[in-house]
Length: 97
Image (cartoon, rainbow, N blue to C red; front, side):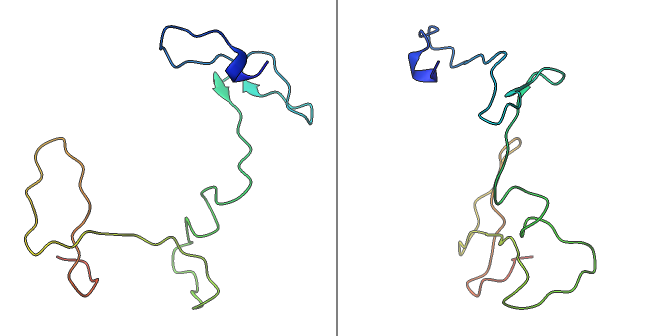
């Protein structure tokens, strides 16, 4: 059954999948962890630019990296308790320290 065919559950936003099999015969649900099994094909953390071994060699134009970003403001606003914020950068794209 497709998710679109399931009856509405009063706006709960929950879809329950039990006992289903993927096209290759693997279970879609990991019952031990009460989780949906996801096979990430590319760009999935742990490699490919999302991590790098300490002191590993870096080759420009070859080594994958994950870029980071910041926000530029001439004067940064104050962040209050419990808020998230982007790190501040200078107008020359350097980290503001």
